[in-house]
Image (tube, rainbow, N blue to C red):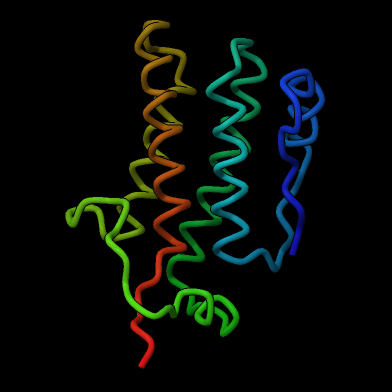
Length: 151
């Protein structure tokens, strides 16, 4: 399992950005790894004011979300299934109408493309980036939610 660069101190923001932009997902990255990678990217993106850096982060986020979308159609490996089986199912972090992971990923992909377009007023782009952040974090939590009740 790959280690995702994380922010340890506020001063490390400048150091984490090049790491995130250059960091590639392992070919065998699982659904949880990719979801965490998306969350790391969007966490830095929402704090980024530099347009070139934001575009680079968006490009990496698009790649990661596309990989996440692919993984949504693949059977989970046994070790992830074991993590999802718990004593009882918890209340979901997303509403019933968003219980389809592909829909959530498609929403996030659309938001990234809108933010990257450069066609939006700055205030709208900032708000959509915030929405993207929240959407990706919810998605990352959602894919890890227990779905199977252990017997």
